[in-house]
Image 1 (cartoon, rainbow, N blue to C red):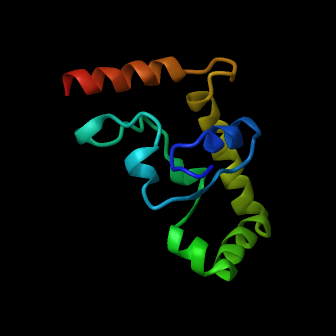
Image 2: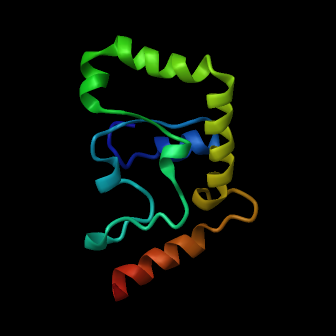
Length: 117
């Protein structure tokens, strides 16, 4: 996607792919279940475990380093398996289409925190 809050993150999750985030502000404007000035409600979702983060400067100015980051993951089966396993743990928390998802619980908790905290 071309904005930090694009649907591409969810498309990657639905496709069972490790999301590659190119954004310096994803935590500020797009991370799921944000709730205002009190910070981010992650509720056990550690996005760093299943996403690859690349800052915007590196993406625009140092493609060799971007390639190294991605190659490091795909050439290391243990690291790739770590990302993939963490992705499987997080998908039911983020995708409505997953069996036994808990997305509604997260939405309601985020809403509660917006109102009462």
